[in-house]
Image (cartoon, rainbow over all chains, first blue to last red):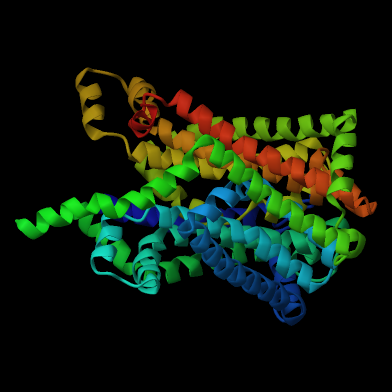
Length: 258
Length: 281
């Protein structure tokens, strides 16, 4: 018990200690790359809290959400079709794996040549890059549906619609969710990359601009903000996932206990 | 008794047509033919869109892209860039692997270290390396070092987390057996913990290899590090659209090769592991 309390204290104290050490050791720093944390935080407050909130943060997040959500819808739909129609799967799966092998960020220059530098480019880059993890996870998840479950569907003579929506989808749910989580990360990466390539708007663009003009504190503020968004978006996804898949997590726990 | 036996009897009949159809798609000739047809349809869509000029010069035709690809194959600069990209990814991944195994063993075997580092790793885990790209470019400039550091930053944490999971998954019976044989702490780490974590290390390589390749490309594309990434950037900036497409296709092939190669190596190196034994037969 005592040991448990000690471990808990350790878990809480270490990150705090790290921040304090960073603050303390950097407070009189004159290194051009590592400005004092105090200065970074004050720039963070100046830049991101309100001044650029509506002009840069909101558009970035909007692109992320729109791109991610449409990627997920498209990925699940395409994955469903490919997994349930063997002919299509045999035809297109190898090509899809080649497309999946392309680094997501390399799609940004292609989309720039196709649709220019506007917002459409960013959203479509995010969408196309993020569609693959969800789609592949959906295909694998549906292929892995227990054959006993399929037999039960046949015995109960479920309609195709019932089969897909009330048996296959929940059964593949955990795997689809795992794919969606990867999609979210990819969407976040492409969001930053699409802003860093030749545009002046968005968090990524501001951060890269700060680097190019050697405004170290501004750049650090951008890195902090991007890090926070990456962490919080993943946390939010986890919360939603745990709620939606609570039946699955519960059944896993039961399995472990028994 | 009777209805159940009739249900059993009718099952194979019910499944027979479906299974036969599945087998048709699985025969080698049919598989190759279908793959070719699928790829052909996708390429035809591309060609039609390009010829009709929906996207203007931004979408080159198949012929232009293929021609550019052929020129690239004869261009030593392209091969140097490719070699550089692969080398940076492999080197960065190898360093991360060694560091990740050491860190993971340290964190996984000592409980207080595990708790002390937990919040930090959990916070950093979902943050991609592209976030710190501006910092790396500021410190190292558009160089190989910058790309290498970025690859290490991007892959060391996931390796460490995998190794920690592997260490926690060590069979306690094997551990106690080793202890009763009088093995020392280091010997147990080397002969029990490390082999137990081997499949987790394999997983981290399989995830890490495509990730490392992607990070090198990002470092080139956005940070100007040498390699295929900056080649794409230059082609795009110069309006050489067939070049952009040809290079991106090359990256697709490289990414696919990285995935398949690491999976094959994993199977070969870990053939003794329970997870792979059933695949072997």
